[in-house]
Amino acid sequence: MTDALPAILLSRLLDDSMDAVIIIDDHCHIRYLNGAMQKLSGYGGGELLGQDLDGLLPDSLGAHHTAYVNGYIEANRVSSVLGKVRTFAIRHRDGHLIPIEMKSIDLGHIGGRRYFGAFMLDVRAQRAMEEKNASLLAQLEQQAMCDALTGLPNRRAFEAAAAQAQARIARSSAPLTVGVADIDHFKSINDQYGHAAGDAVLRAVSQAIREAGRLTDMAARLGGEEFGLLFPDATLEQAVQIAQRVRRAVAATRTTAPDGTPLAVTISIGLAKLAPGGSFDGALSDADKALYRAKHGGRDRVATAPLPHEAKAAPLATP
Image 1 (cartoon, rainbow, N blue to C red):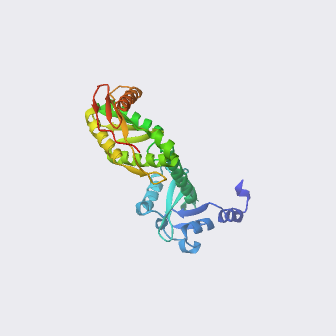
Image 2 (image 1 turned 45 degrees about the vertical axis):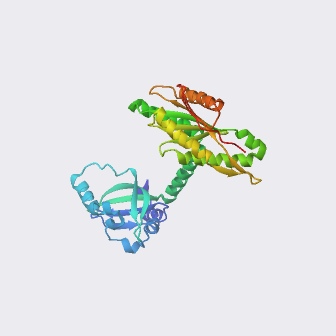
Image 3 (image 1 turned 90 degrees about the vertical axis):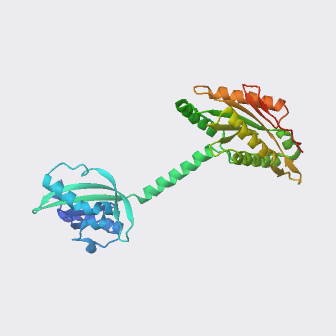
């Protein structure tokens, strides 16, 4: 029981507490603050004693706090905040706000006055760690959805975007076209010039695909020299026009082999319509079949499925 202890012991305990402690009276005048509270606020104890608590509160609360306390006392109602830990902020002497966790307590009447106390915990370090962890998590999530070599989204990101697009067209019946693109004769580049040259080609082609498409389109590296394409709000005919622009952009791209030889590459693209309620895997399979037809039709071209329509271009020589 604390009533058997000398009051000085309790005072010393509060004075040296790691938590900031403050006591105010029913006029919201500060009557006590311990060392941790002085350090937290930037004020010496003598500077705040007798002063209004409002000066330590955020502007949005400071002007109303005294009236709120008086209303609570006069109404003698149950408080919705007293006795509960809540997130709050106090104003430091230099003006900046410090995030804290606070538990306020009604200390009752003593000597004809009503007193209230509060324990405060500085959570700046905790907030900084949470922000750091959130930033790190966002970076890891981004890395998990990004192809490290090309900077394009990877297969996982492509499948996630496809699922979102599929849900969207189910609601709106907006057109969506799926595509698969593949660099022509890519294996011969690796075999003749090495994987460093192949990586350079992949990066250059990826940039060309990204820049030639619309802002709403998505291109992802599915693996090796294969790319997945999403054309939201584009009919099959519209997607053909975009894909042709992509194909031409890739054909105009040049990279250099380690021995200085200029490299020109082309791509073949297969497209398929994804109907509302249709299977994305099925549409992707149809696009892959169209890609196969484009490859066997001479490469450097766009083919669609299931219609036997092809948009051909004269093949470009590959060094």
